[in-house]
Image (cartoon, rainbow, N blue to C red; front, side, top):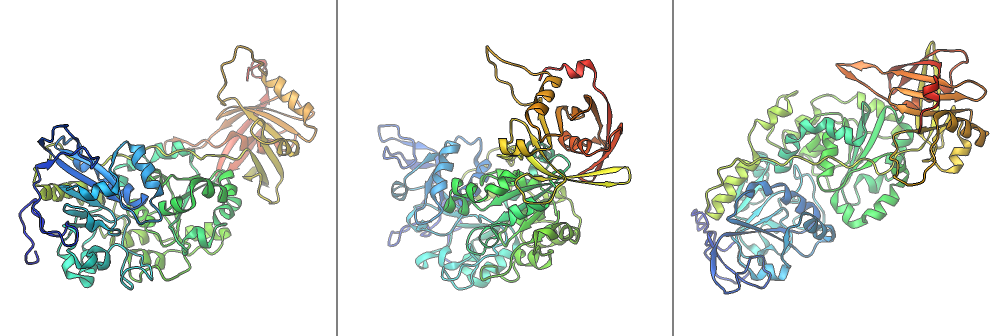
Amino acid sequence: MPPNEPEEPGLISGDFMPDGAPEARVEPLEWTLRATGDGRRATGDGRRATGVAVLFAARSAIALYRLLDLLPVFAGDARVSRVFTLVPGSDFGVDALAAVERVGARLVPWDEACRGTYDLIVTASPKGELHLLRGPRVLLPHGAGFGKTFHGEGSADAPSGLDPAYLMPHGGPPPALHALAHPGQIDRLATLSPRAAARASVVGDPTLERILASLPLRESFRAALGTGARRLIVLTSTWGQESLLRRRPDLPFELAAHLPQDAYQLGLIVHPNEWSRTGEFELSERLAPALDAGMVLARPYEDWASVLVAADALITDHGSTALYYAAVLDGPVLAAYDGGDELIPGSPMAELLAHAPHLDRAEEVAEALESYRVGTGRAAAASAFLLPAATGATAAGAAAQGSALERLRLELYRLIGLSPPVAPVTARLLPIPAPPSRTPSAFAVRVRRDGDETHVERFPGHVDAPAHHLAAEYGMAGERQSQSAALLYRRTDRAATAAAYSVEWTVDGWISHVLDSYPGCRTAGVVLSPVHCVARIRGGSLLSVRIEPPRENGRIVHSDPAAVLSAVHARPTGVSRVTCVIGGRRYEAHLAPATADEAGRIL
């Protein structure tokens, strides 16, 4: 430890005092109670009480989200009082206040936080006037790999998060603890400031630990997203002028227009700073064509990590989200970054982008995915996190490298001078992600016959592309698409309203009504279940369509039955069996005259 820096737990000198203030001793088990809203519970008579006050100081939403990931460190400890404050000065702090209110935490106004004295101050960004806060400071990163620098800000070419200009503002001491995720990060910090590196320690990454702990929920996440057996491709966009959405704003819709709906699903993870800068409404409006095509827009807190766990492949700019994916799953990663001034050469993210296939055009995505070499992502992630270096190592092996939360708890309780709770600390599992806000209700359908197989590819109906026919879901698609559709269908699983007065269709009655009402419609059908439909082609009799889904490794793989109806619509007359190829899988559709029970079923 550098000279003049005491080793005694709870006694951290100078580094937490405002400029010009004398050194102060932190008494970890006592603090003065006030009734001024400084985050401490007041008794009303000025008495002192035993307890520890921990202040979580966040400058932006992304920093706050990282702080929330480490809350299990203090879980169950009645000796600890947890309060939050927002550090002023960031353009991206607008969503942080809402996030604090959403989790129900106590918020201390900044000026009152500066008047208080805390036993521990935990931050995830070194920026802002943190030196005004009284108490030993702990700094955690709010990303992975320290791969960015911002010219004109701080020290020239210093990684954001390792810049001595922010770690030791006004020449003051560095944080009492700088918690890092990899030994190489301490080496990088030591080249910039040996003094700052002396206070750094490798504890791991609490956010990565939470993602790893949630891997068993991958199937549940995919079910919630409606992914099925489709390939979920997730785009990740950081913030700023070099981000994917700034440089290639049309890429999400270009992919949606190119990739068949029954084979692929799209997702998008946007950096919280961009959410704060743009706003949810404006962001959704800009992305409207891709969202209308069914793209998942992950929420910036927790949801993004759940979507990451569910993903089969990633398309990324130079943001560090891809390193988390590479560390956890090592699925294909495609580079959609065309260079600039922000990415630091030799950083883990720079290495990943240098070796990942580059995606120039949306039409090349399938070939680019196939060209990805397994192990590329994990090799880059191994220089950002405590992971096994061997190619092909499992995520379970990564988790076995140690507990970031456990190590962090030991460090933090050492600083506050208390013994940690007896109960083990465990990462909190990620929540089930929200499903897509919109799903297509009309499809441009391409049909190709190859021998006895009928290949069906469906694309969003608002895509201007050649197609065999338009298929629309009645009651969900607009009138213009319904009038233009050659195939109209409906589902029976839409939620029904409980009303005293109602009118119900039978299957046969509804199909006859649609064919009479829409002269351009050649085929009308009802989806009764994932394996059963009833349909009629104009001029023909009512048909029962029984679908035989494929089996793969003990699983039964269902596709959207409406895609099978498109194959039935395009079939030659007189055929009693149609072999459909949907999303690269074979589905056998058996056709027979509908029974009276099927025709009379109530919708």
